[in-house]
Image (cartoon, rainbow, N blue to C red):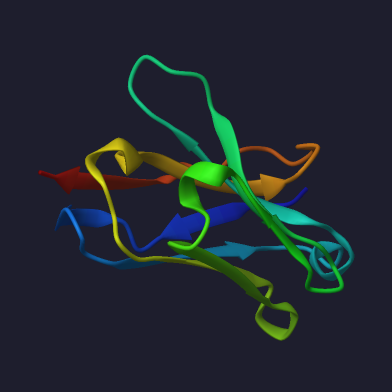
Length: 114
């Protein structure tokens, strides 16, 4: 069973930056496409970006040019660099495979003030 631990969230002003980290247990991490999801209050959880095992990436339009996903397979860790944060980015952020087929972690809260 894979355990996911997200960290790095916080309270920032609009225009600020945060770097999120997600550490996964287990040996299958390196062969999986891993994504960052977010869930805002009253909304469904959405996949905002993912990185394939080979390193190619995808982003939803709302975060393109502002967010950057990366991974370090040696550390079983995926990162999310978030720049130019907006109040609409306020949410709990989670990582998981793109299916998703692992159990969810607790997430990390990102709050962007205007």
